[in-house]
Image (cartoon, rainbow, N blue to C red; front, side):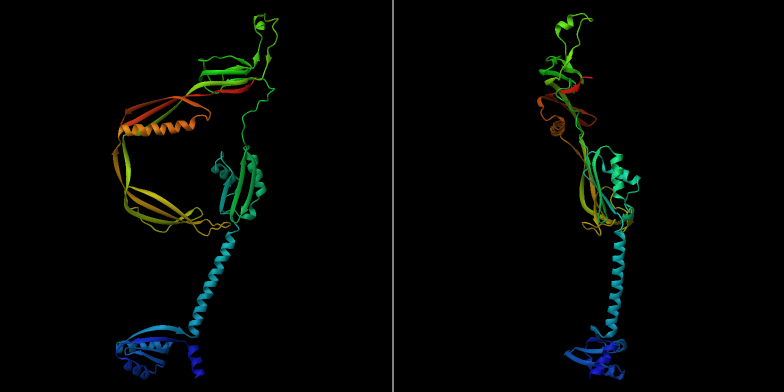
Length: 402
């Protein structure tokens, strides 16, 4: 009847599955105990399904123990279960609402600072300068005056030609442009000498304008005049000091090639310690919130020798939103230390290649290598390789006549 079904719905009921060889006895005992079972369906000789109230299901436990049957719940129905689910969902929604409110609150702070455009000036220095005016992680956006920060950085460092400061979500972005420090430009009508940039042996001098004062084979030092912009007639030089006229000044122009030397030293031990992985791994995790770290997995590293790999996973991070919460995963790989004696002939080749590559990075672009000298020396269980290259390069640079 509809009224009975409605009553059962409000009381709540479960659909049970009963398994055993004494199903008839199970039903009879339930009736004798005033436990109402309805919609009983016999699935097979040893299995049946039925509906029973919540209270009735609790009372069936004693009967099940008596007859030796097994009972399990197939489904739960009725208002009590619906209310329980609603209560759980209500708590879940409340928790979700609190989480959203917390996230919204946290978005009113700066949780990361990105410096872009800097090449010569280190990021650490810029961050330290910002910290001096209390611009750091955790500052509230409402207390951040981007125009003030921009003005401070421009006044603090003369090396910036441009500074832009703006926020993107929880990130503060400082975009800078450094000044290009150009060598002093000497106009074509300005009197100047051509002087040596470094110590060298003169190889070739072409004086297009000015007076050549060095010859091939001369050894010159840094700053020495190679082509002079001070011109004095030979007849003037022979005249007396009283009658001599002032020399005239010109803008020197020309090319001076010189031979220079570059040296590189590479040292490698003959006995080298290498690390061989054993395959054993130990992992630990820690939660980092701001500057505070919380160990999630405690325990000592079980290896005497190991290599460590660190992986950082950012939580709650999007293109415009980032909170200072991250999980740091430390992976420790056990290694055995093994000493290997290196072949001296092979090591000589390795050292020479390393040294030559390092030297090539030092050489001016337009220079030409004339010769290379390599010396090896075994001492204190190590091989020292000295590489010297002789180079022909342009050594002249213009300098104003003061």
